[in-house]
Image 1 (tube, one colour):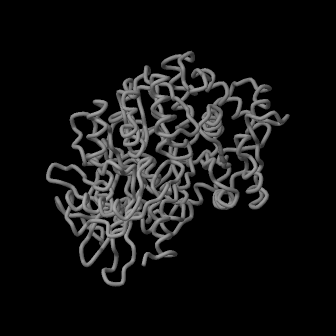
Image 2 (tube, helix red, strand yellow):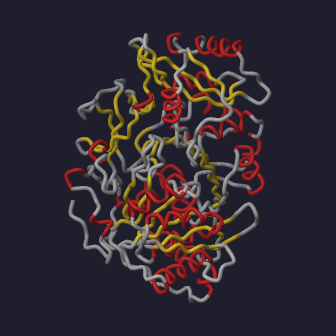
Image 3 (cartoon, helix red, strand yellow):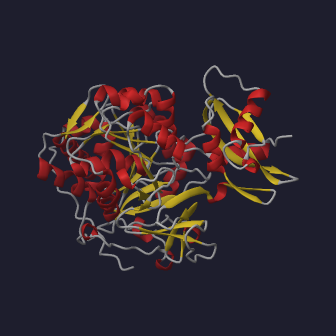
Length: 545
């Protein structure tokens, strides 16, 4: 498609977009998705909200009592933009890498970089030097703004990849970003970037082992606010939002920055919390909106902390499918109707969901306003109701990988294909079956891993589980369940048989896990998403007898 004239002096990002013929179809079907040629997402989210609602409203809070107003965020973002452009030589289109947990200063850095016309490269605080060096090599950032507690790996990555200036914040060094900002006026006019200038480079979460780098425009950031944010989340200026996902993941970015700041609400920033700690934080601070993974909701209920969610009026679950049983358990314990949703880093946020009385427990939902969906066969042809196939999505956002041949696999006939197997029922609701790479074929039967996980999870002694296929010479694959038991429960042969019999009573007996392994923890990425591929790798290295 034809792009607007870019404001970027450094043209790396636009030059690295996929060829036109590999782009997905983009549609802007809602009036609110019609954007002018010039749009800076940082100014659109922050400056516009200050203009509408004033600078004194609370914008960012921490459980430790730190409080930033909208005016504080705006002033510090402007100071950071000044440091980047005046002291560090950043020009529009340069990449600025961020590395920090969820703290107020990283939000200011995000806004400051966007307002300076830079392209933000989001990275996890949990990444190690080698992983960071790979991101640096791919994205070629000129500056990294890094929480001082996580600076060592960034300095090592900079030395390995080269060409990167690391600036720490929150420490006591003379060149600390906070000290640099003290000498700046806080007055800065945002660069008039094109709506289709690249604003974000986001590495995927790596659940399939090899992360890719996704590319998002300024208008994409606005689009998720005007689709899922506006129509499903529906925050008000009085809301306080809690979320366990890091800002480096687009789920966390939407929940803690894009949605609340567009609405004039306040974000409650937590660095890392367990489900029990999360429930306590919600209660202590009176959070009214909560974004987290199904595992956390389930653990809060199982551990008896459901009453601590009394102030929550909007709860969103994403990252992985929330089973009917978990949804109903949360609803029975709290009265909350959890909003399920499927999204992807490639499309920036959630594109299929449902809210309130439109929810059908067990179904993911219907396309979010502004998006459309279909079920596709292996050749990209649309299938009818109740036929399983690949989920395809078209909307205002779409997959654009940075210099990556895997673009060809993600986009089929204009559809973004997410790698998920779904069924669409006659009423247009989408029902998750499995990740396409999580379907287990055993003795000729197709078995969806998530269905078995949901059955195992219902056992009263199971805290959580993950199901994958283990290679088997006789059957092709057998269902293997990795199970974390509740504290104090013994995992022995008797417990294995008990769980297997329990599952046989709830789903077709051929689907039961023939191999049950008790583990202390399950592998997850920093956003809490299960990494099934690591369990498959374990089975390949150490096959069961």
